[in-house]
Image (cartoon, rainbow, N blue to C red):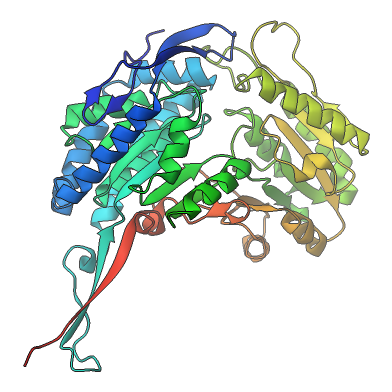
Length: 489
């Protein structure tokens, strides 16, 4: 297994080696992947100041959009050139199965990046050549013009479960729009994100336009959310941390874009119950349930609940759990011992509140090392159960019965979260009507979603603020300016 060679931060166009080393752990076998260097707070300060200087100088922001897009395609080419090493790095540090890592985390991310650039260049002409809003404005003005301009300096903070996807999802639209970016990945999976520094170097991005810093703690991340030179914080992670970032950003009234937790629902209408086993498998396969959009609450007609519980449980028992580097593995480990303990704790708590474990619920036999947890089906008595209300972030699915569609919708919306959802029905029109009633940022009908550069995603309620991907995801990194031009005559 060959890893990408970078092990230290990329700051203002140079690789640095100052700071203390810390080990990155492989969650599949608890071994040391490699040692990396934790950037001290002073390097975060230097990266932010360099980003401010590069933006204010116009060295990147003043390039014509097509030139920025051309350079960013070279940036993506440089990542493609590392495909094998990058995939091995992701598998080693995040424990994601090979089929998912290569197909989605790497190839899917590159496609997302290229399509985002295409989308940016396809925005209305006024984005690049401002046009008049109107010609005659009250007060004697002759012209009023709307302009879209970059926000400025962007702090991008990404999670452990999808470092490359989320990195691309933030870096490409932010840089395309003319911003300068400071990226800080999760300390649990920092290595793979260093590929962005290498790509910036290969593409010839001006110093300060993109810095990538890794750290073992959170001092640098806090500087990124409080520093007066930062204009926008884009964060993907837990709701608890998102709330802290909102508070940290408040003193300087920064723009804040947050994609936070979820407890997404999947509703099976009576004519689609036979699809539940396949839909249930999608929750735990590939990411071991460690996805904010994972639909971990399944609602089915109460009179067929026992049938669905049995079918989903049978499917789970045939999903291969094990070494993510081995072909055929469908479920790897969760990220850490603490995350596995969280899964165990919530299974026990669910049982205390009346749930039954239909399958799973413990550490799998034969896997003595690594943070594995069996794919688990909980037969939940109702939607008030802790396993139906809290984001567990592991391979745990709760199945709940409903008496009619109105009750299913009510329970689906009875959550502090609203990130995504799914509705399944043979009658597509009826299923779509139900989907419109779900209070979530992205609801899929007869599908479980996926990467789409053209479709925005984001949360209602405590699942976040703003949108990523799609035109709205680009607009998140822009300001709107109105220029009103009058006459001295």
